[in-house]
Length: 107
Image 1: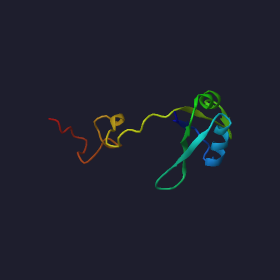
Image 2 (image 1 turned 45 degrees about the vertical axis):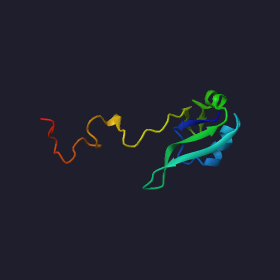
Image 3 (image 1 turned 135 degrees about the horizontal axis):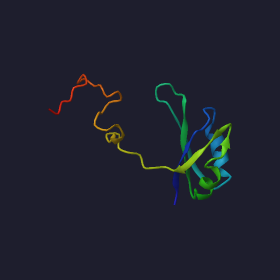
Image 4 (image 1 turned 30 degrees about the vertical axis):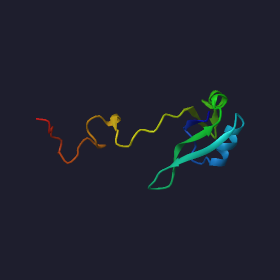
């Protein structure tokens, strides 16, 4: 059964071909997707690799030094619904100061 791996701490110069070649040494690679910033198009330093059997790749490449960076490789988590922003608590915005001007509206 195919599984998707999260690959973090990638050098910004990494290409999909380089990552495919690196992971192919440890099994069959089905896809590689390096994430870029949607506004600037610049690499964000992480991506996803889908493999038929990723166990060997995870064991060999988590902590592996690639172009001066120590890779983080683990099983990817399912993507949350964009509406579920539980990591931000109750605020709902990034700065905690929305249109409410800092007032608690629950009074």
